[in-house]
Image (tube, rainbow, N blue to C red; front, side, top):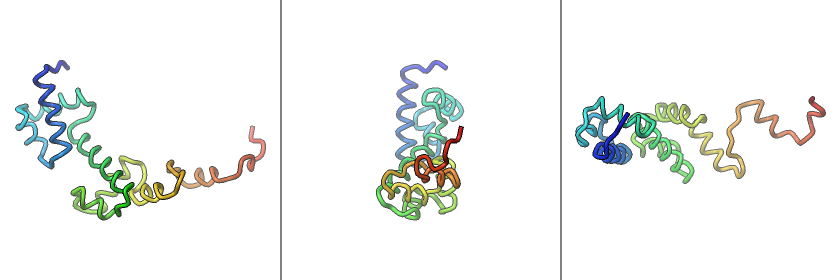
Length: 135
């Protein structure tokens, strides 16, 4: 898809609005003088995400930063404008791969950055060579 210079500048402005405001996508499209359907297609072609995906990514990144800064999950949820804790937790888990409580806890433990489920995590805690010769 070819995007001319004027449309490029409009899409960059729309990206800023998506990140900084809670305006609906349709209103942002109107503000940058593009039809909603063209706006969504051109935005996805230029940035690799739809406007909704981009906005969700920004919110999840902000949530990660707030949790890393010591905020509680509930404070983070409502500060980012989510209507309920379960909806925030579900979205965070889908995007990050771990619930916000586990993500926050993993940041509190020095050196623990990888979230590994169940028995695989237990295997990683075994001393080197404890499994013997496994060829």
